Amino acid sequence: MTTRAAPLLEIRDLAIHRGQWHIQLPELHLAKGELKAITGASGCGKSTLLELIGLVLKPEQLGCYRLGQQDIGQWLQADDQARLADTRAQQLGFVLQSGGLLPFLSVQQNIQLPRRMLGLPLHSDAVAQAVDCLGLKPLLHQQPSQLSIGERQRVAFVRAIAHEPALLLADEPTAALDPPQARRLLELMIELVQGLNMAALLVSHDWALVQDCGLSRLAAQTTAGGSCFVPC
Image 1 (cartoon, rainbow, N blue to C red):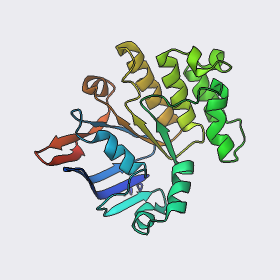
Image 2 (image 1 turned 45 degrees about the horizontal axis):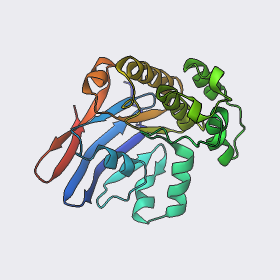
Image 3 (image 1 turned 90 degrees about the horizontal axis):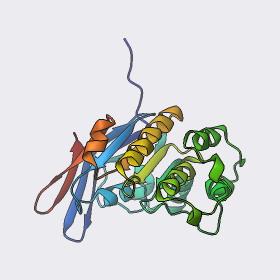
Image 4 (image 1 turned 60 degrees about the vertical axis):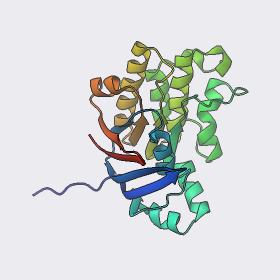
């Protein structure tokens, strides 16, 4: 008889109010190599949910939050900001909708920044693989202002995984791209998340793209007072 491996990410009974809007996540499990989409109508709380999971916001209600062997929920309840900050820096990677690249750094310097800040060796085989897969080698010495939107988003993705985090969180990373670019970036994200054995959550308004790429998703079920995100 085989036993099921413990999930990399386990969350239960997560909730918060944003103004009069109540956002709930009853349950979430993510395994290594798994990428799941968060979908729903505009304004339903998708980005807020990502910020909760990313430890940017403190939940008002929480049953369980475990990342690997770490009991994050205990640190949230104790408001242990030092441990939460360390977790954000070391175990989480963020891809912002805007890309968020520093304009005064080159592409290579932007990608190396998370490793430099954590005192890691600047070279990483995983990062080199990602740069190669995403076709970024010719762009390494350029500034973000010299890149197209699609190129900036690819760089932002590599920077988010440069320190090889356990969990990647991406907020509408394909929103500014045309359909072929969006599909290509998402396919590469799936390939690299699986190859690097991390887990990922992706906020997306593009339900068709999510479906075409075969992703499971958390869909917002909305009422007059809020959203509840459930597997779909």
